[in-house]
Amino acid sequence: MSLLSTRRMYRRISAEYPGCYLASHSVHQAVVRDISLNGFRVEGQSTLPRDTIVKIQLWLPNGEGTVDIDKAVVRWRTEREFGVQIVSISNEADLRLARHVEHRLQRAALAVAC
Image 1: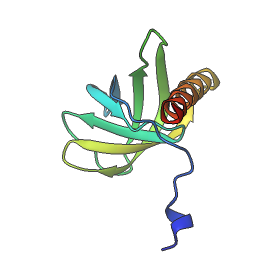
Image 2: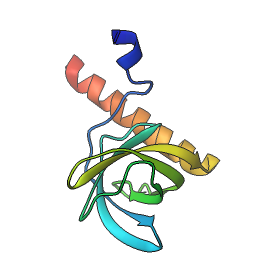
Image 3: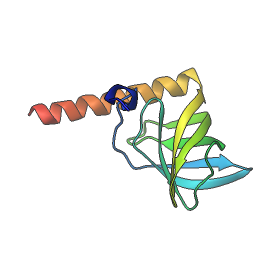
């Protein structure tokens, strides 16, 4: 497998944001990590099978509000974590997420430059 085929499409930010996910008509608390514009890692009390469709809400820090993911699909899983790919998100939520990720990446770049 070449390096180009394994490279991520979007840069990820390291985070630990509170959130929740809805699967099979049940709401579960979670911690959302490794956030990108395409997906993220979710830690919950239980894991979900691959290809499960979920709704996810995460709370951004510093009063930035929530990001509601209308539809995401589980792409991988471990005992307590799973990775999701965003399938459907509103324009407003997409913009809020993009601004947040861009801001965090800029802050990280400034910290490295100093």
